Structures are given as structure tokens and as C-alpha cells.
Image (cartoon, rainbow, N blue to C red; front, top):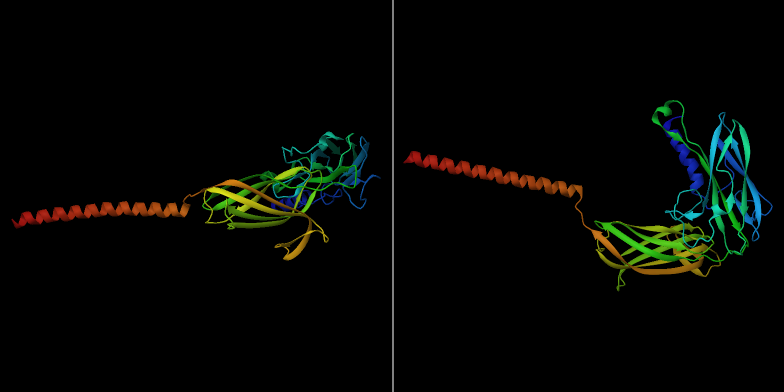
Length: 355
């Protein structure tokens, strides 16, 4: 297999892990794959990920079948991670984020017990069991996370071996635990805004938080920027189809491209946020990405003041032009002085001869 083919293969596999709202528990197409054994207390048995309805203090065993389709023995690492919102504004269940939101009551890693690795013989399968426990206290909302299976890194064969290319495949299945079908309502907080631009270009970052133990789906954000105390809109930005995990936060990045009106100073940011599409929702708004008017269940207007830093730096082209111009100026001065010197000397010699 060529190097390009391997890279494409890796990208496709990781897109399965990172881009789904609730990650499937059935995967095929690589040297190994997984499938979930759905238990009786699964809320929606049509889904292949775990979504368990449990009672306070309940313990149960769930299992995932891991298949080795290759002719070699493989080792698969097993990891558990709470659901969080990544920097792209999407829910992620794979190990990546080190710090979790402070509103998270239960870390799913403390409620699930299972192996950290699985060794499979060639062309074999193995059922991997996990012991899960619901907290003893009544709890409204989701305890959400994911179980990730990652094949141990191994160098590719043939020509790719010399290049050091690593073939690494990972699959994740979501694990959701709840005590009720009524999981409350999401909320949205604007915690902090920072911004730094160079030559009127850069980004403004707004940290958004969902402090509730439920998902915030279909998130649409409409941003406006003003100088403090003024009403003239200096910047507008919109992004849709975002999603936030329960009890999570992320840095929402607002790109700024050559907005000359922005200088160092204090500004007000206003974010109108809409969540959970609902044809009967009370909040109607135009969505520029779809070109249509849509109804949402939730709406928040978030406003705060912040200090924006705008730096002016000459670009490379300007430096080159100025450097070249400066060099030419000095050369012109030197040539001029030499020319004047020659003229003066010639004039004196001529004058002496005339005398």
C-alpha cells in the first residue's frame, strides 16, 4: 500500500471517531473492529452505542466484542474518557482533553471498571466486559463518555517501513448513563473573551460553557462587536451546527480579517445563541448557512466587555521595499559625494593650469 493510501486510510478511520454526535459501536473495514452487545435496559435499541436507563446505585456489566481480522497477533489499548466539547464546537468522546469543566459532577472514569488492553490472536474475537455503576444519589441528566479501542502502533511493511509511517486505528463507542428520560434543559454561559490582532487580522476567542448535565444540540451563534458605549456594529460573524456536551466548555473562535476599524481598546461583544431545533420552538431566526428561517427551543443573549489588543507590524514585503529603498538612498548619497568630489578636483586642476 502506498504512503498516500495509508494516510487516507488513517484519516477516514479517525473521522469515524471524531465527527459523530453519538459514536457508533459497530465498526468494520480495518485489521480489527468492534461491536456492542446491547443490554435490556438500553433506551433506544436501534442505536449501537450504549444509552442506559439505570436506577440509583445500580451496577451492571456491559460488553464489547473486539475482532482481529488480520493474520497477526495484535494488542488493542482500551481507554475511557468523559464526553467534552472540542475546540471545533463538537462533542468528542476520545481521550484528548486534560482539564474538564468544573461543573462536571461525575467523571465516568470513576464509574466504569474494565481492562486497559486486549491481546487478540490472529483471526479471532474476544468479548471485553466493563462493570458500570450508577451513583447512589438521584441524578438528573447524562453521565456521558466514550470507550476507545486503539490498535497498538506498528510500522507498515514494504516501502513504507523506511519512511517510519505509523498505521494506527482507533474506534470509539459512546457510553451514556441516566436515571430518567427527562434530562433537564441546557444552559449557555459566556465566561471570558480575549482578543489579539496583528495588522487588523487574527481572532477573538469567547469561552462558552454549558453547565447543565444535558446536551446542547443544533447550536447557532450570531456575533456582533461594538465599541463600548456605541451602537455601530464593527464586526459580524455567524456559525451553526455546533453541539456541546453536558457540563463542558470550549473556546469559540471568531476570525477577524482586515477590519481596519478595530484598534486597541475596549469593546462589547454580543452573542445571540440558539439551541435545539424544534418546528414548534418559540424562537425563530434566519440561518445564513441554510438560507432559511428556523425555529429553536432555546435562545440566549450573551453580552460582555473585553479589551482588544491590536498590533501593527510591517509585513515582509514592506520590510524588503524599505530596506531596498534605504540601501538605494545610501548608494545615491555615496555616488553623489564621489561625483561632487571629482568635479571639485577637476575644477581646481583646470584652474591651476589656466594660471
